[in-house]
Length: 398
Image 1 (tube, rainbow, N blue to C red):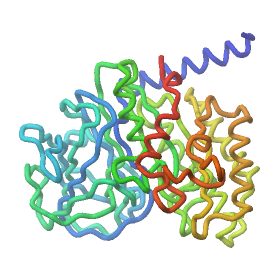
Image 2 (cartoon, helix red, strand yellow; image 1 turned 180 degrees about the horizontal axis):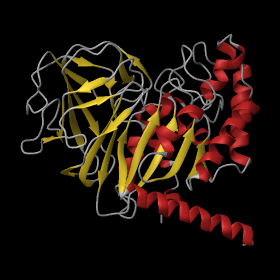
Image 3 (cartoon, rainbow, N blue to C red; image 1 turned 90 degrees about the horizontal axis):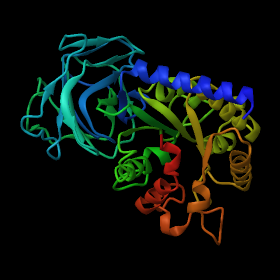
């Protein structure tokens, strides 16, 4: 090893050690990146059920008002173990405080981290997070795709109710962006930054980050690693939302949604297909990007990760021939070229070859029908489980 390489390795180790110390052992156990402005809400209680990726003995949450146009007041917040649907397991409900107070007001564009509470959380544990809105909200902040429903409650503070009385549900996830846990192990987090395939569109059970979290639980040395799923359906690397594309670009959100997560040691980037298709579908000159521009954007992300002592991997793009509107021969050439660059450029610390695993051997521009959810773009449950199997767990070992 050259002196320069050794110096780089030592510097990276120092950065990682410093980041771990600054995080105090916390890791992200669940995450959903805010992606858009949501509907107005009346004064009510929201109960949202999420599933943690790893265990812990203490819990805290982060609330986001990223898209709000005015300060957001949360009058009360509770967390507890889910007993199924919107119910909370008896004895597990914990009121949350923010700076020692039960209510918090979050400025537009900002977020708030709760104080920690003692709560034993098992791996893959469903948690119920309840938020009381004492006043109407003009513009909410949402993550627009969820596999588990949000339960709505008309006026009143029901955050401490064991059996949530409302049957009304919603497909948006409101304000909640993170659940962190603290345990006896060193906090370590893998942040997965992606689009709808990372978000789990097409799944009926769980997306591939959830399947990877379940896989880690079979490895005692890796079971304490948290998974932060930072997928946004319709997301792009280079450009912000422009219908049908959603959310701030990865270049704009990379620190907030990946590098700033507590315990983050690795980032897996699986994006680019929406940049390629947007170049054909959108008329704005800024949206007509080339493969070389996408590569340059990925290179910038790699540089920013390494500057923080974080390893960065990339996943190859899945085939999508047969999709309505999105696929073209030009788009396919772009996908093939970008995948070749991901595999051979040496920009990334590792490459996860999703394309090789899920493409149709007889028609490589198409998803293997065995793993196709039906839209020829998103995998089904079997496909997502296969994607999780492509991650080499040796990359996560100490």
